[in-house]
Image 1: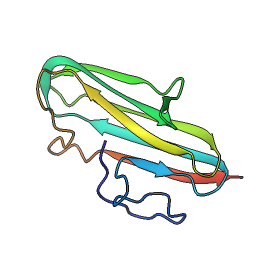
Image 2 (image 1 turned 135 degrees about the vertical axis):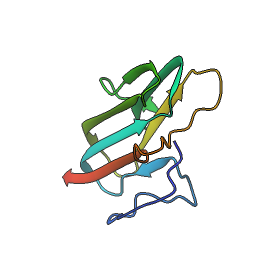
Image 3 (image 1 turned 90 degrees about the vertical axis):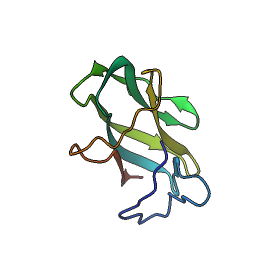
Image 4 (image 1 turned 45 degrees about the vertical axis):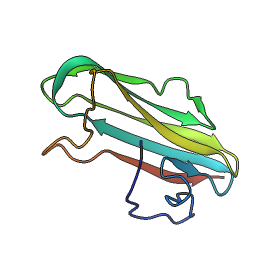
Length: 119
């Protein structure tokens, strides 16, 4: 998922000019990570989203939604221990057979939130 807007980044872990898909932990600790994706209406295929740390899927972060004509939505919340330099990425998949927007009209934009919890 490409993220093009940042509301607040106190620790400077998101740099869209380098990689607009990843957050890089700037210090060790625990990150509280939440995310939500809503797809446009489409009755074909599947929808899925999961969280990766350093390129590997985090167990338990997989969320899937059936194809639907009413805005299928997936999301999650995880506490993720990190070392400085670890990367986090939200992976979004769909199998509708064509392009499928994640900007569902009237349903809000995709989002993720990362909060440093403690060291």
